[in-house]
Length: 181
Ligand SMILES: [Fe+2]
Image (tube, rainbow, N blue to C red; front, side):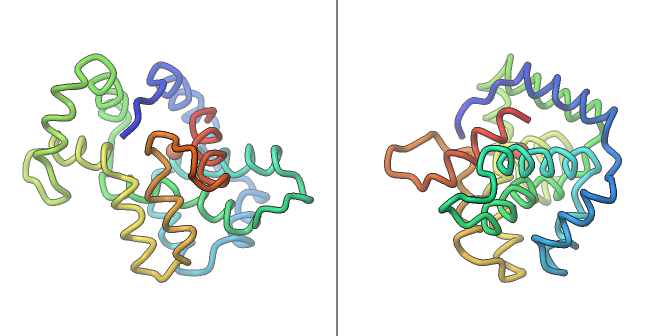
């Protein structure tokens, strides 16, 4: 997993907490780009992950406008679902900030615990850190289960990978929009 700008992420979490309620236009956007099954998956996310995912999609919309040669429906769907794997750990805010700080200040320990965790691990922190580190993989699995198109699943699965020169442009843009939000 590539390193993230964790102080900026903590600031984003606090900001999202203040504005986490969905507006009518958010709901309309979700209905436009996600099918029923994908909407169910989206709404399993916490309120601030929902809002974060919408903000990632809106950033991409601002960048791409209407005349992009890229497939906007695919990019917006990937943006809305890119963190779907996080729904598998019901995180309290305190713990969300805690795991972000842990990965920032004690990265070897956080990675050690994450790599020895699992979705069903009895130890809460191993479960949480596992989901934090491997949420792209978990999200891809969940999207695949509901038959989301493979191109979108690919973007979900690799959105935290280190940038590669030969990667699809959509992936680079998704990663950048994610980091800004
Ligand atoms: Fe994200």
